[in-house]
Length: 198
Image (cartoon, rainbow, N blue to C red; front, top):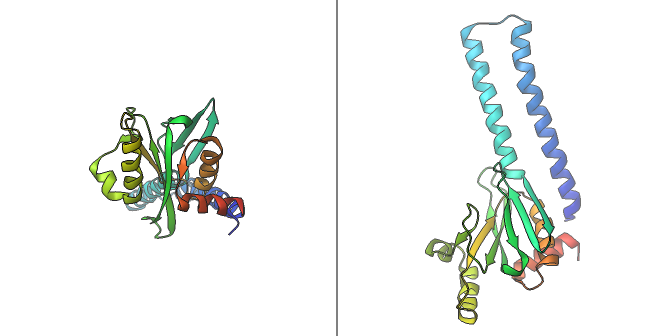
């Protein structure tokens, strides 16, 4: 699969969806006003449809949005509807793993990126290692236990990138090229090869 072509399709599909939803959102009230249909039932029905359109737009933005950049040895990542930026120093990235998942909203195959870090910071997106994490991601837990033996003085944390769909391939490629001291799982390397068409 050519990821860049698929990415262009994803971007075009996203733009089409937003355009259609925006058109429907504005045309429906106009139709009611144009035909002077001001019955309570129709107005209530319209309000419900408009609310569903807004929810659909928010859900789409939340699932597709993934922005990232690199500057001065740090990765800046922002995903979903929240615009909080995660700042990750590249020298603190220890291990990157991808795990296959099935998306809940459309039952399609996808993957998540799990980044193991050697620092603790208070953030909504970066969490200290806990029992739930160790149970949920056993392969990363295995790598964590090895790192803990090699460098017991470090405090470890993690972040999971689940949004962005195909943009995650580009993020993996950026992490691979900038976080030179990090180690990558075989699954992660396979995704990077797939993106680079190797």
